[in-house]
Length: 106
Figure (tube, rainbow, N blue to C red):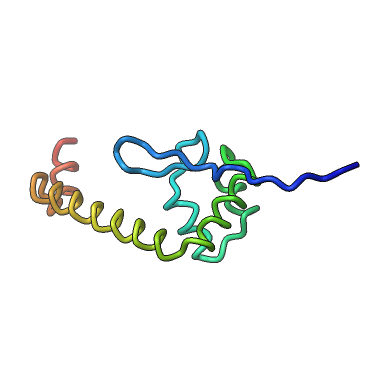
């Protein structure tokens, strides 16, 4: 038996909205990296997100470890975008007193 070394493409897909997802799933790159950063192993990540393949998670983690600066820049930008969206939504839809308003509808 002969083994061949090859370079498999990193299983990441780039959506039009700028979100990076793992392979052909709805799981975001952010989600995998955050779980890994919190101490989860590749196996635990797959267990938590069964649509992922173990080999794909290892590829993604390897990419992250080889490109931490670019990845951290991307994650920072995603957090900034999320904060801006949250602030815009809170301004448009006041969250204060929402529980009381919902209970009053009963």
